[in-house]
Image 1 (spheres, protein in one colour):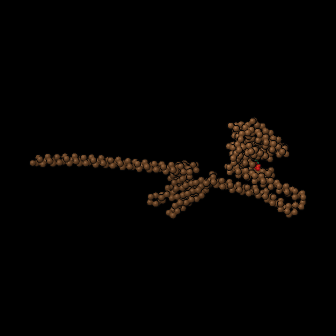
Image 2 (cartoon, helix red, strand yellow):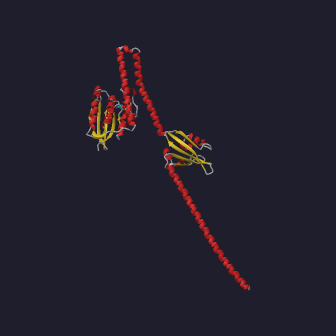
Length: 391
Ligand code: ADP
C-alpha cells in the first residue's frame, strides 16, 4: 500500500515537473518574443526619428532664407546651408552665441524681446563690417510639448542688394536733379538779367541769348540721354540685329564727325580688316558716335584719333584711340558709371552729360559684348568693345 502511494506520488511529481517545465519554456519563449518585438519597435522609432531629422535638415537646407536654431541659452544649435553661405561660415559656429557669430547688438535684443506674450518679432537690421549687410530678421520662440520655451528660431532674408538698388536710385534722382538744376538756373538768371534792362544793350543781349541757347541745348541733350538710359535699363529694348560690314557704320560715323574733327585739327584714321558683324546698326552708330565724340572732346587739339578692329574668339573687337591727356587708373572702370566725370568742369564746358559711356556700356552689353578702357596718362586713352561676328 505504502509502495503504491510512493509510486503515485513519484508519478505525480514527475508529471508536475514536466508540466512546470513546459510552462516555463512557453513563458520563456513568449518573453523572448516580446523582447524581440520591443526591440523592433525601438528600432523603428529610432529610424523614424533619424528620418524625420534628415527630412527637417533637408527642408532647412533647401530654404532660400538663412536659418539659425538657438537653444534655451541662445547658443547656435543648427545653421542651415543658406545661412552659412550668406555669411561665409561653417559648422564652427555651433555652440557660439548670436553676438559672437554676427556681431550685432540688435539680435540679442530681439531674442530678449521674445517672451510669453511676444512669440514672434520682425526687424530690419544692419550688420556692420567691410561687407555691410542689410537683413530682414524674423525671430520666433520654439516651445516644447509643455509649452515651455526651448529655444529660438531666426530666419534671415538678405536685403543688401535691394538696399543698394534703393541707394543707387536715390543717388540717380539726386544727380538728375542737380544736372537739370544747373542749366535751368543759368537760363533763369540770364532771362531775369535781360528783363531787368540788359535786353536794351544789343551786344550784351546777344551774348546772353547765346548762353541761354547753349544751356537749353544742354538740357535737351541731357533729357535725350536720360530717355535713352531709361529705355536701355527697362530691358524692353529690342535689338534690330542684322549682318553687315562693320566698316560701313564706322565710315558713316567718321563722316558725321568730320567737321568737328577739322575744327579741332584732329586727324581721323580707320584701319581694320573686313569684318561682318551681327548687330543693330543704329545702336552701333550710337556707340561709335559717343566714343568718337569723346576722343575729339577730350583728345589733343591737332592730335590723332584711330579707329581699328580685329577678330578675336569669334568676336569683333573694336577700338577708338586718342592721344589726349588720357585717364587716371582709378577712373578706367568708373567712367562707365552714370554721371561719373574725371574733370567735371571740363565735361560741362564741352557740353557733356556724363551719360555717354554708360549708354555705350548698356548697348554693348545688350549685344552680349564687353567694354573697357586702357590709358597711359598723358599719352591718350583707348576704348575697346566687342560685338558678335556674323556666323
Ligand atoms: P561726358 O558727357 O562727360 O563726356 P561720358 O560718359 O561720355 O560723359 O564720359 C565720362 C567721363 O569720362 C568724361 O567726363 C571724361 O572725364 C572721361 N572720358 C571719356 N572719354 C575720354 C577720353 N577719350 N579721354 C579722357 N577722358 C575721357
